[in-house]
Length: 172
Image (cartoon, one colour):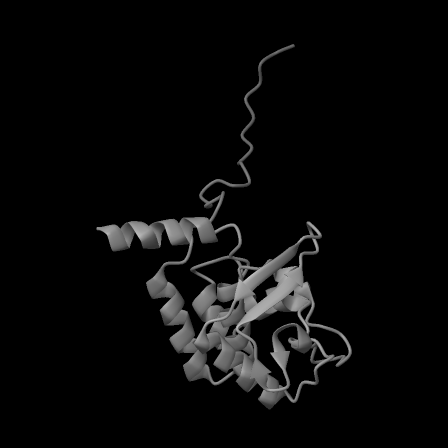
């Protein structure tokens, strides 16, 4: 067998691969301000809830209004069973997140048994993971902010790094 050199170019040449860097506090606040300025209560509620809850995208999108609110009164804590592990997860909501979710429920005219983030095409279904990914990638104000910073709202894998960085910054 003869040694032949292949001139094949690797698929990842010149591309960044591996885990993405976590969002910094400055980036999070920048995104919040952009979302507030854009005036889209759904995207703001989605982002704030993703940051506070640290849920995977599939768990975040499967939340119902009754999971975190009683009418227009949003609870301080939420509980959801993860689809991947089947374990219950509790999370706390900040005042800013509670206000953005309350506003979304009011503007979206959502009932207690409906999904918190319903599909626009079929009211009985939730926003799908595909629609969620498209929301991040197409030309809406939220995506221009998210595209260079993070691959997803799914911050569960990034959260330990983010909080570790925040603690080390406060100690310095």
